[in-house]
Image 1 (spheres, rainbow, N blue to C red):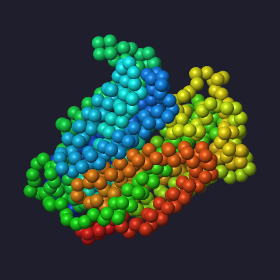
Image 2 (cartoon, rainbow, N blue to C red):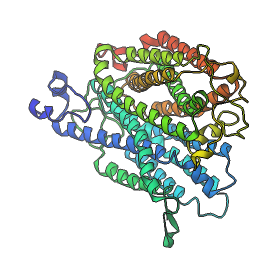
Image 3 (tube, rainbow, N blue to C red):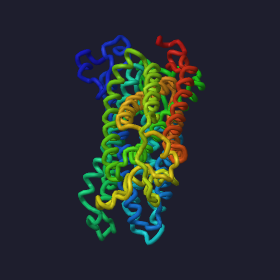
Image 4 (cartoon, rainbow, N blue to C red):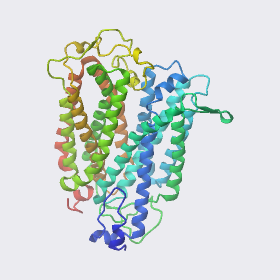
Length: 519
């Protein structure tokens, strides 16, 4: 057994454990402890790279799509954006099922290889003589399919940590994911210095420019990730107390292993948690989508101003989320995961309630016909388009304000900037709290049994939310305005809080439910 002094130096990265406790000393050797946390850290990195793979090209997809295929329109752009989540939604249960019966190295390696191949395809989509936009659609869909390994990552971490370690580990995983979403656009900005022309490697017909360099970097990092998984990752599985368990993925037998505890999983709690997770991601996805059109309509920002200011706001929310993830690990020890989830939903509700328009001041009206330069008029793609369609000259920005084609602009009070910023801060507190608590509670409800399929369904529900959220808000906002849109969201959050209240007592750990561990 590891000595207390040695274990104190082996504290998990960004995490916590309780080496020195009676249970810990009995169940884990120093060698096993080090190997287990090395493997978990490799999956932290994998989660980070997966989110970078999504966000590193998000700001350049539209101009690249226009460059390679002039027939592509805003409607098709919406499909390209949604293809990532569609691919992830399909792949998550598949990889999850695979990981239940085979070593986790297999689905992880295959999924990352698919992402590497998809990034290479993305770099070559300008080469074919026609149908280039469809090649891009396939490439982004395959990147999303590869990102289905998120289910494997979370199921591995859930199975390789005790109840005491679970919240901290899930928070670390979510923090790595958030960092990837934050740093991806930063990497893209750095590659913008290469320019559109860049250079061409004639031998293999590869153009290296501001559009392809990010995905080539992603492919290179993916190869390094595969090497690390094959050489460092080991199969580890422990029960809720931290004792090593036997399972089909385990490579080396040990006399210290114990059988997986028997008992039924609470399926009501499982379904309820999936619903809660869907609503949480649905709400944040629609908030991200509506930020740009809302600020352009309410504050008469130009497209260039909206991209700059909203980009700063979303980046700040990302940093705020990382801080929240770290703080949750400490707070959960005092109040518990269910209380944090409930508190997070209440904070989100307050955030959207503050967004409701009040008063007698109205937004500036845009009287000129903008020919679809105004965001919410037709498709989800036209909402996304403003993130890329920045004019080259300031004097050619076109009219600003709330377009008169949206009838609600004439009678809906404006949302003041202070309202919007306060709301953003509150949603930035509530969303990450709910996100990590959903994953943590879900993994504890499932217990020490293989979680791959269940995590796959949870990831799929999140992917579906990221698809449907933007579609919902774009249609409601365009037709009825922010008052109706945010009122419906508030109502949705109230129903979610009610659901949480109904199942609150059922959202307990598997071992607690079966009386093996006291809550």
